[in-house]
Image (cartoon, rainbow, N blue to C red; front, side):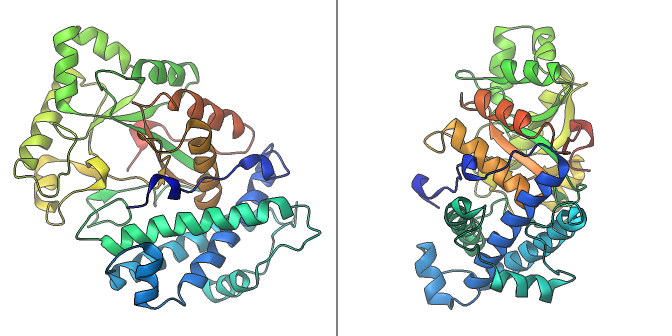
Length: 358
């Protein structure tokens, strides 16, 4: 996987405009879409050995890479179509894009002139999207032998692909960790903001919590929020003999102790799960809950400001989706409020957790 230094982040202060209304959100969105599309197009010229070298891998699964590339193009076209609806109000980064060939044509031609109002953004954005594309292609190259959120095994697995334009869902991993844990802080912040998120917990952490405090106090922590499971312990569920038991036990525990908050969702730790699990999840009435926008804020990864700015850039690029924060890290207490403040006037919405992954 990418070394921590390779995680894409972008200093948003180099973008010359605040996202102070929906039209300006669209301008910034069109810019990021075109910059990423340019990088995606250029990557198609690499043959298999060159791609393996670029991604730092011995071998790559080219079929998987092409499948993921195709999905990225479809998302980009959809994003740009939504983003260009305000071109009559502000024509920056508006080009004739009617279908996939015209999007690819504009991506090939896309460049920022030296005297442009946006010139300071151009090179850092190009680097961001090159790194972000490498993250995605590296995951695609290893899929399905090493599974991740980059692709789905079927309809029983959900991400934010189906969500409406400008709609985002907040989700949080490791949400009942012993210490450090910011769950109480985050849930309180969301309630005060009239917002909700989906918190994914480990069965063993909930069990430990219940040994220390009452069910009522746990229920008050998660009041008005949603709780899904990550299994009994945080480990890969793709090569673990007891993975079914891990999922079943944790789901039963959460369902019995937090019936108001429980949602039938399993989030695989690090996105790793088996390709042949559909029958099991259907029998349990569970869906696999993946994500689209990763804050990369786990231990040793991006700092709070970097992860918040990464998430905002990806919100502009994809325009909807499931955001994944790590609630163990203190950074979430800075990153999430910053994100909510930065986008408050931009015409986006935060999905109610009960409607997430539908």
